[in-house]
Amino acid sequence: MDFVKELRAKAKAANKTIVLCEGEDKRVVEAASVVVKEGIAKIILLGNEAKIKEFGFDMTGVQIVDPATDPNVDKYAEILYKAREGKINKKTNEPEYADVAAAKAYLQKFASFPTTGKEGKDKLDNTMYGALMLKAGVADGFVSGACHSTANTLRPGLQVIKTAPGVNTVSSCFVMVAPEGGNKYLSQGVSIFGDCAINIDPTEEQLADIAIASADTAKKIAGLEPKVAMLSFSTKGSGADPKNGDTVGKVQRATALAKEKAPELALDGEFQFDAAIAPEVGELKAPGSAVAGHANTFIFPNINAGNIGYKIAARMGGWKAIGPVCQGFAKPLNDLSRGCNVDEIVDTVAVTALQA
Ligand SMILES: CC(C)(COP(=O)(O)OP(=O)(O)OC[C@H]1O[C@@H](n2cnc3c(N)ncnc32)[C@H](O)[C@@H]1OP(=O)(O)O)[C@@H](O)C(=O)NCCC(=O)NCCS
Image 1 (tube, rainbow, N blue to C red):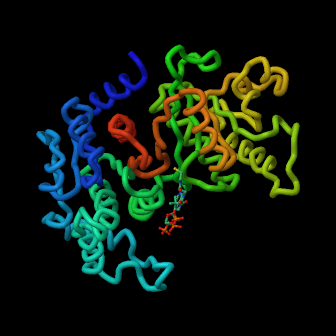
Image 2 (tube, rainbow, N blue to C red; image 1 turned 60 degrees about the horizontal axis):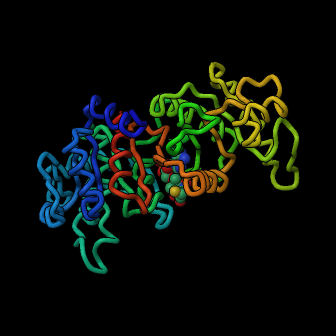
């Protein structure tokens, strides 16, 4: 069975409930219909029922919740207020929510925008509502971002779901799936690239967290025995970067930190990409490393390198990029690319169900 079919089959067996926040987006509505029809997960779709049905997809079995009229809004307002109590809005220097009524007003303000016209679609934002349903345990996972930016999609999660116990950094990775015919270096045809989407310039502590979290995703979602390579333009001290903030040293220190935090992991660095993936180069440049030449989980030093790297693999190499898969949240919450298609939304729902 190919990787994506297997992913969907595993999600089906998990039988989780996923909230999709963007009922105003045709692709999301179609994906909801496909997910339920194929039994991949149960779906709660947020939005105005009449508008959702206007798209013309079969909504049998899809639970539609309209935050503008949901009788449970008081419960979610209470949860929002408690989660953000004492937090100050950076722009106004006032409390984010003065009381539960202010939290309720915030939720209903976004929910009650019309879904059409200049004033409508751009402002309609049920992302916080979905995050609160996840926090309340009404849903097991959250998927959004087809028509909202990454920052707007993740911020409610960062604010109310927060990190898992013992985790300091929310990060992301892509599950990269080889084109037909596989790949000579990666026999399973699957690998992990992190963090290509969230942490713009991670500190060495964050980079170590990203590596450990990506190894976990490699195991849980990609079914890999992770071999983690900390990437750089330098292999084991072959290069240095003292004039630009010691970017090589950052990767070296992150490697040491990750080894200290997760000594059981097969993790090493710093490596150039060829030393990480190609046995003949790994042996030459990093002799004695158990990871060099055999890595399947690649950790980029910053979001520039990671984001460019995964897009090169996708566009020039024909690899399918599933994700970004978020990691480190206390509950599974995933962001879609705004260019996503229906299949990609369905795959993200499947990944989210497996994280739950
Ligand atoms: C992820 C991102 C949205 C965070 O947004 P932000 O505006 O920096 O968020 P804030 O600083 O307001 O932080 C909100 C909360 O999240 C926490 N937080 C922010 N980033 C975090 C992270 N990576 N891990 C854990 N917590 C984080 C903050 O500590 C803060 O907590 P608090 O309000 O409870 O005290 C931001 O880093 C970002 O825009 N990243 C790039 C996304 C992007 O454009 N990707 C494009 C490629 S697809």
